[in-house]
Image 1 (cartoon, rainbow, N blue to C red):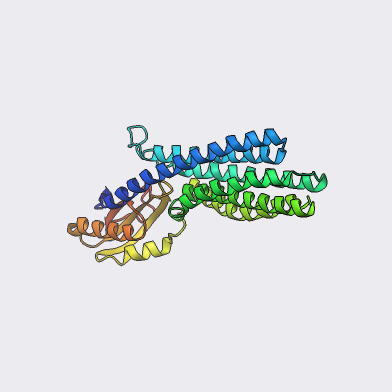
Image 2 (cartoon, rainbow, N blue to C red; image 1 turned 60 degrees about the vertical axis):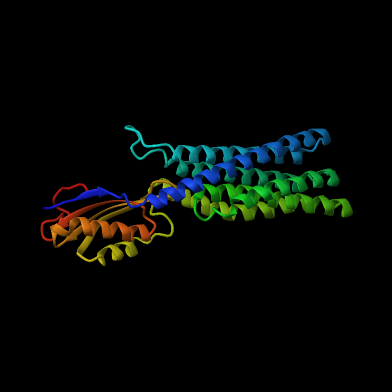
Length: 310
């Protein structure tokens, strides 16, 4: 049996892109944290001044968003740290755990909105529509601007997607509060407030479910979304010199980096370096930047009964 195992060094362009993206996102997260923290202070003060439980509870909800942004930022900072003798993969996986925690925080926020809205349906309260609408209008600006900052990268990283959903959720909540405040001002129909709350919470829940499912899948080493194992195996098999492929394992190293380990069967051991290099280039085109390939000569490889750990 002739085997060859190596790690990919052909993803420097990916790493450079990730560094640029990470630097920009770090600034975006800091701006978002500062804007939202300032708004929480203003909203909390206004809530105490007007005696509005609605504003105070929304300030608490916005504070949870600040916490989620901080968690995501810490995860990005950890992902940038170099591997150590103890953490040989580095700390990139923190981004996956952070996306899961943020999905849970969003879930709790949705449940609290439901509870508060149902409570208001059962026990309607008279609301100072004007004061609530003006403070909520400021919330639309703050949360809307922060959500807009994350739009560009939300499709490339699960943490950014989580942050975007948090901010979009808050923007929708603020829009709902403004609309209900205006309706209450002109009609006195206070029941519109909890109805809007339930509708908004349902919209957020739909998006959050996918975020939670995706983050749980990555945490359990599921194949990342957008990668088809059958397609990857086919592309490896089509590389000249490859006769077969087995023991294929694909997982996420972080919310932006995917890895693969596989055994390939080859005819000519003298071509091993060229074949492995071609396979790695093919994998990079599939969105897999870190790969470990073990090559076996035909007829002498692992047939599944040799006891090797594949």
